[in-house]
Each structure stands twice: as structure tokens, then as C-alpha cells.
Length: 81
Image (cartoon, rainbow, N blue to C red; front, side):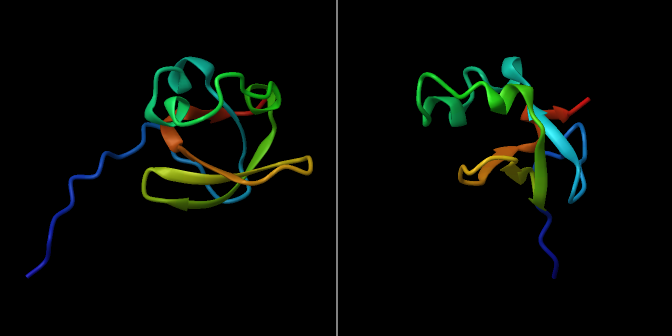
């Protein structure tokens, strides 16, 4: 017997190595924003961050500076340009 999971599929899919930034509107009022500092560093909204791993609806992002990697929902990210 197989179990069916109803995990929401992200609207945009990113692969390992993709360059991204955080979409400010999607991030505001999310569970992640409520669990984080009130004043976020500007670099997450400007990018680029590199997608290291995608697991389900979340991606691990590494920034090009000496800061820790973070996990965010894929629907809160957008392609860096």
C-alpha cells in the first residue's frame, strides 16, 4: 500500500545551483518571518543566494558572504537577475 501525501507543490521550481533572492511580499507575514528577527539583512532581498538543496517545498540557500545557510520555502524565492 502506498501513501499519498498532499504536500503543496511550489509554484516555481529551482534546481541546485540556481541563483535566487527572497521575494519580500511572499516572505512578509509568513511563519518564517514571525520566527525570525524583525529587521532582516538587505542582502537576502537583493541576492544572489545559491540553492544548495531542495527538499519538498523548502530550499537551503547559501549567500556569497560569511553568514549561515538558511532554509526557506521555495514559494518565497524568485530568480535573481
